[in-house]
Image (cartoon, rainbow, N blue to C red; front, top):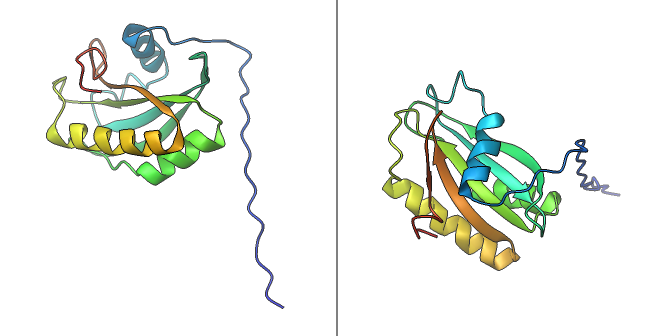
Amino acid sequence: MNKISEIELSYTNQSDQIIKVTSSLSAFEILTDNWNPNTIELQEEFKLLLLDRDNKVLGLYNLSKGGIAGTVVDVRLMMVVALKSKASAIILAHNHPSGNMKPSAQDKTITKKIMSACKFLDIDLLDHIILSNKKYYSFKDEDDI
């Protein structure tokens, strides 16, 4: 007899604090409060802010950490995390260690790819924020989403 492993899914939110995203600025502030200030200008990281239907923060997932000029974004893993945490909406975030807030062609391409995945899974992609220590670029504010 061939036994296979049963897959278990779990999610816990260990915070009693209710934090709500109300704008790109509030998302930027939440992200910078939870980003290591010692590495934000050193290496690129990609994070996922997970939200419920009322835009209350469920959590922050560190998707990848890369080098000076890039990091890997696994869309399938991102969607697994969003589904597992019962997120109704997400905000993408990554830093540009160079301080240049202009989105690259790769940034635009991955945003469109993630947008398609979100539509298929009925998850709202609210924004994609590129940030540094003191400034940010919002795809939503610039009508790139």
